[in-house]
Image (cartoon, rainbow, N blue to C red; front, side, top):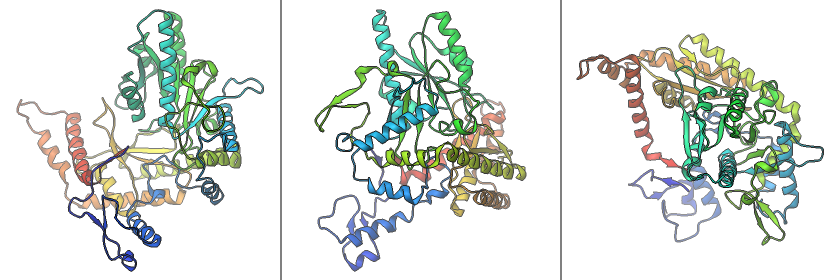
Length: 497
């Protein structure tokens, strides 16, 4: 579902210079036209509008893959008309998905016996994967509580405040209380000790993040597992762990194999990963893997036969394309362990180049960690005159899309810029980005301070209570003003998916 606001309330037609060769009448913008138009004109009209989109390769806000090899592009186009759900009609596609599930399960050290098939499913992304994993935890917890004759109507889940919005969606859509561990200034991931303290008998699982969206940091899943084992022994509970490895699942096994975060830990019962992030496939593919068959309640699996044969299905949607599943299989066999390792090491090296380039400016604090997802999150050391939102805005003039955002609760006063390093982000681009950031800083230094300095001057003064505001309060007010400013600029383009 898309909830959108019209970009223009005055202009209700679509005009195209080239389309006038075929069509002299403007097309309605928000209603289906009465008459057909030539295919050339339809293509040109849409192509002209799409030129105003940003360049995906320069979209440094996104973790999602923006480049694949031509051979894989051809496979995608060759299979774009296959509906994955028709398993009986497309048995080879189904087999390729099963191979992917087993490859990923072995990559995550699932405890599989000789010849034993892994338990997992392909999804449209990590959001759906998390919904499915969450439903499995909720149903298993409900069954346990019913068997013990205890109330089963108030489940909760423990996460850090740094989780992606899909966890909030799961909690709201499926009526599960979300208990968030608040962040601390300088510590922007979930604290295992605080998380375990929040666990109670109604906790269906604790969700750990392998690669925080905010700064790329890996949460300490091993420490969380050890603390939770102790608490389960003390209380008699069996609270499990889910690992949201959307970003880090295709990174850690290749360049940080010594980190224990996966099924090597006994309480990790399920893991999700985004194939369309560092799995190196275009948007539209995710995976969720369960430790073993007992961790996925059988009653959640539907069996249908109206497409030609008995087919088990556990998804939130039904029809979906086969292309991304095939593309994932291509990458797994094309690259192998060696290829993925080389790519991730290259991303890691380009991250280092960018980080060192920013440090040489002596204008930024690096918020991200060296071990984690290959990205650089950084903030200004001095934002009294100009801030991170202005840098983000000015970088767009060079074509770069670099997001500026504030940290979650308890750290809202911290504003950061973030650059995600993907496979197609070269060392040359990293060096060019640093040069453009230096240009922006020079330009901002020569300009008078905008809203920031004026607000800071006001905020630092005496309030109505006669109390001088703290630096943190001043920065929070400045941040809120800029958030409103950015929101106002986006009003005409607001799309909520």
